[in-house]
Length: 84
Image 1 (cartoon, rainbow, N blue to C red):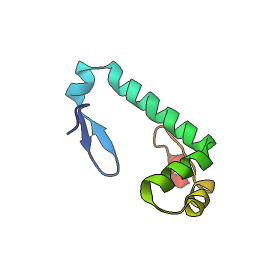
Image 2 (cartoon, rainbow, N blue to C red):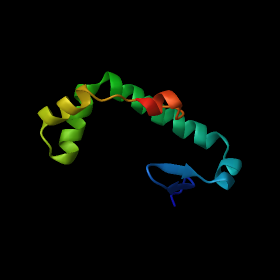
Image 3 (cartoon, one colour):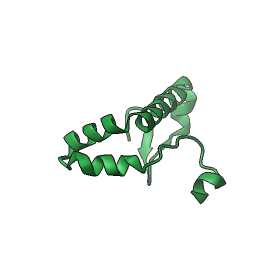
C-alpha cells in the first residue's frame, strides 16, 4: 500500500474509498499528472525513447521503433478502446 492510499492491482492501481473521501482533490490531481505524462509521451517519442534507453540499457533504435508504433491513450476504459 502506498502513502497515496493506492493498492497495487493488476494491471495498475486501485484507489481506496476511505482515502478518496479523506483527500478528495488528490486522486484528480494524480490523474491529471498521469494524463500530462501520456500526452507528453505521445508528442515526444524520441525523448521518451532516449529516457527508456538510458534507464534500461536497451538500445535507442529499439525504443524508437517501439514508440513509433505505440499509442498513448489515457482515460476511461470504453468499448471502443477495448476494441483497439
